[in-house]
Image (tube, rainbow over all chains, first blue to last red; front, top):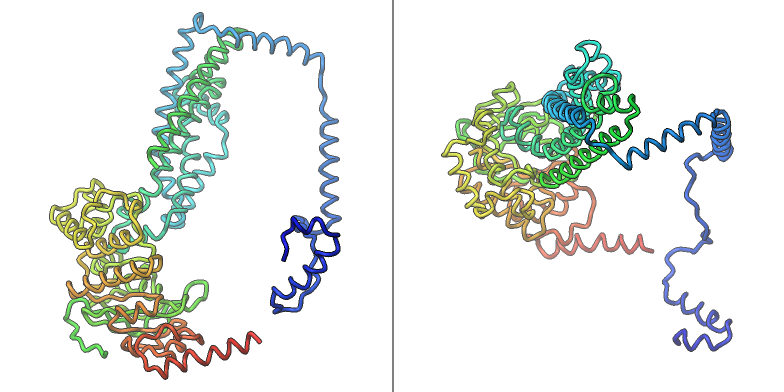
Length: 297
Length: 286
């Protein structure tokens, strides 16, 4: 065989003529060769082409009709634009001073609410999460705990806050109860799922030593789920802080109440100060929690 | 070797008509009757799905047998309830495929977890084990050659080292019997032999009986005193390792060329076993 460099000088039919018999000689033929297609496409998700196109066209029509049905009041948009600009202006000159007393009180209230609600929520979530893990709990306990989780998760924080404000009055107590309640649904569910995914062999090995149920929990389950439990608790801590700003609007205390008051009074510079502080605190918890999660892996 | 053992000797195991049918309908074990005298190291071989793991797990009831009885000395394990079963489990150390160590716990905690059946929940929660247990755990770590690794996390060790921790954990129970499930499944051939030798040695030192599930026939022949072959949940061979002829292996596993696996055979047998399937291979190739 000559090198391709020398071949390029020859006429094109020559290499193909010499190449064919060489190939045939090199490859021992075990099977009769067939003509295989050289074109291949991934099979479509919906096999029936008519159904597929009908669905695509239907979705496109719905989108066009949906956009068409939006009624935009351009005069109102122009109005709001001006207000929006003032809001942005406030952001450029946030005023931390004139309402600092209110802001500080709101922030402290929010932080207290957040921390206490997270701690209490986590403490309640752990047994419920264990009860909601199919591989640890008997059926009746499992169903009960899953029921508690479903109730807690199906109610949005604001609705729960309104309920608790009605029950215990305005202020941070209602906020604390709301956040603790929401934490239970979130954390128990994720903890239960994590427990269900543990390596069963480790639990089996501990059980085989004659360990009791609690000892299996402590020696085989806890070490496997602890890093994630810590990570989720810290994550919930910053969710709770953000939520505390929202539920304050319906009267459950905290920095949300301060924010709401500032916006009601058109004091966008103070509102901006509150928002900036919320962002700063959320970022701080975010960074510190990711650092802690790395440490406990 | 026929077990001739008086029922009072410590660590003799007796299975009578052991049967397991899973809820899915799979018949894992059918009427297995077996007696293991103290100090005997028994290898359980058979194809995947023959019921080897199920058999071992029925003995300490990690899997609940559907029928049949298990006796450890006088104790009928299959008749025990929660507390009694936990006490009986202390007498049977278990060693696992893939080690089954608690990866995020230290080596020492893993070894001490062998004592869980003996200490209260509160002691174990705060890792306050009796001084004697701790001393013994260090002695075991020395025995398996891991003294300096006591404070490392289990997942920081190599495969062979982890299995040594697994052995130390089982021995920490001060068992009368070892249940060993594929101890070398994820180890290289050299480490596998070291681990098997270690298991043989500790059994000899303590007069322990052992049932060892094993995939590798050569390894079973090298280290086991007695071989039991399972096929589809039934005992199809029970005898010395030398008795594993190609015919017996075919009985256990099905038709295959057993040529390179046989250690103690005449040359003629080896030629026969190697020759016939070769012809078949050629025929298939044509």
